[in-house]
Length: 419
Image (cartoon, rainbow, N blue to C red; front, side, top):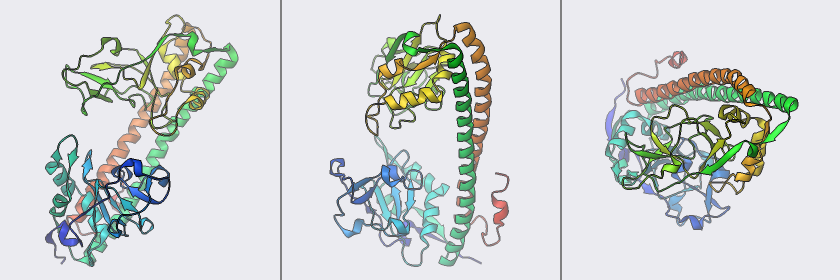
């Protein structure tokens, strides 16, 4: 029978937590030693090297990573993001908002990593985080988190089991994500086909000839929370990234800051993303539907007001998602990588659309809306499946590392079946 004992994280590590390097961003270099930051480990895997930052070298060997080192974020939303260093990560260094724990001899680093992702460990972090402008969790608090751990041989058995089963879940999740992208691609291809046929049959018109006005809003310093009932909110840059307007993507206007009524959103407004860190998201389109909050237009979003006698928002929205228009927008984006990416108004106005009268537009929209609705239903089903897989993964890790079942007798073939 396996014996489990109550330990603290520091009891299984060579030290009680090493903070990383405090390096100002102006000292980042284009090459050298990669510096891992909280944002680099937020998904549990490293961001690609091309998205990382570098420093000229380590101040001390104590900042160099070794295989099996566990990095935990001590700030962020939320803290407690973790990453287990691999063999190919040896020699990398890490920033000051990460803390490193190096497992002692006779401790399986993978087991410690799974412990860090378990529900009790994460709950302890969230319940004890020190809230200021951001949540914080220091090395001492991490070091003193208690949990139960078995002997090394059982740690290895649990880790091997979880490696196999989480890989299975990750593969299923990857398939669902790929299916979701294929659905989106198929819809855009259909819209593009309709766009091309309409252009060939009816000719084209530039968007500027359908516009009454194009405007961007106002982005005051907002609070990092949604607006409460009765409060005003300012929409975020990503409110139309999904291809439709998401009213939840906003921040509360600070108490005492007067709203600017000229930027209030209205039902039926046609919105377009003006600025983003990703060129693929710039030019994303959405129509305000079912507006239940008092929301304001931000300066990262364009509001396109159309002449109702010439263009219907729904028709223009569909056509702006076509391949031809998307390529025109990508080619017109100014700025380099990062939030400097910006879509000039002249590029928006020069978008070519099929020259179709508003009566015909209504008929076309009705047909296209059916395809969009079907795509959304399938997309929502896939997103629900992805959420269930994530919940299953979390529950499996927690059950295994807390000894709720014996992994040596668990049937791995049945663990993820039916998810």
